[in-house]
Length: 299
Image 1 (tube, helix red, strand yellow):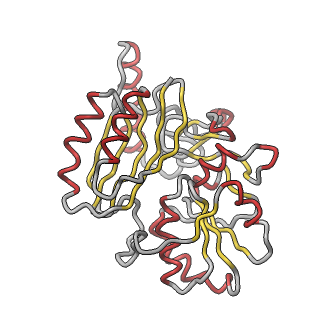
Image 2: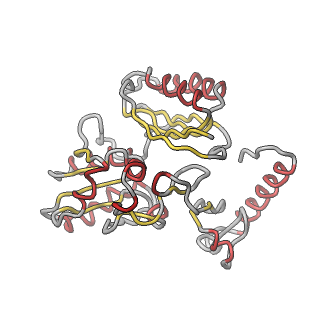
Image 3: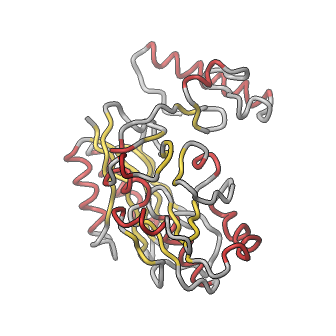
């Protein structure tokens, strides 16, 4: 059984690039795989591996400047969620493209998972899903507003066009693990929104703690690993990933026109070029060859 830890911490790293080599070396030594992003504003990522390995990496991250109170969400998987370990240097640990946004200064009011239902069912509260459109498509909270953004960086423009809809409303926001809401609630506060809230620990914490019979969540939650989606109790969901467009699809979608394993699905068959499809077919061929040799193909 693999332990999965989803984590983030906003902190000031003066030389984030110097953090990468020791993080990568430790993860490799402890057989931990996944992705960690480091930037001047902090660290973000999801890792998976043996219990002892995850504990060692988390202890190392907690020793970094400003990371002593690091929080993370844990779940498990029976098969490896990741094929390799990546530690990448980024300008932002979650890209919003707003240089004045700083969650270390101010964020929205945290709402515990156990209190979330009471908040979002109030008449004076508007609930906004800050995730990308393909994530929202497989699950969201009942009554939540979908901005239909393709990337988090589109959220400020969406707000500018739609803020008139929320006059005299309190704003409740949520995302997968909480990191996007750290920035989006700081952004709204900077735009003059007085009452802004966000779900502490994100959807993952809600699905972990709130019983399904009491839940206002509908569908599954997209996750950025080989499980693709999870449901209540963080049990692995039914979705698979189209390796052409990286969007979640259901097993029945493999029977639809346009599906080709590793190449395309009904979402992207008319979008990707023939050159793209040829490249994806070669990648799929290499994956199958590696599998016959009993090896992992690290694409």
